[in-house]
Amino acid sequence: MSMTNKSRTELRTLREVAHFLLPLVCCEFCRKPLLDPKMADKVFGDKRHTPLKKLKLTVHHRNGKHRDNKREKYMQRQGSVQYGDAIPKMLSQFAICGNTSLAHRPCHQKYEMTLTHKEKGLKKK
Image (cartoon, rainbow, N blue to C red; front, side):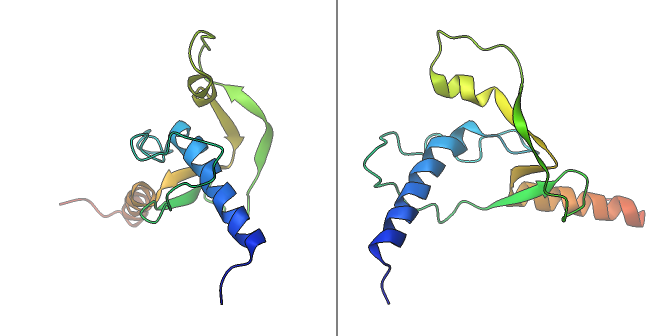
């Protein structure tokens, strides 16, 4: 069964938004962009962006409570904004505050394993 035109349009729009925003948002753990800017498409408006098949992301809960998905409705400023620069650089200096954040799945798995070892009192060899 093929996708309806409405579903196809929505998928293309979501891909375009992902290619626009993910290079500006950094991983909670490694502080690298969630999508490498070299991989991101540079042209917007035509909704013909490449699929993000290899992109593995997850939602990290800072307090460890998976039912607590609070996100603040304001944006916290992180550093000075220089208006001579491009708008994407300005956007990258803001972060949504709350209990949840996005992270690369391998970075998050490494963090979870470190926590598990600390809790069980295990040491790395």
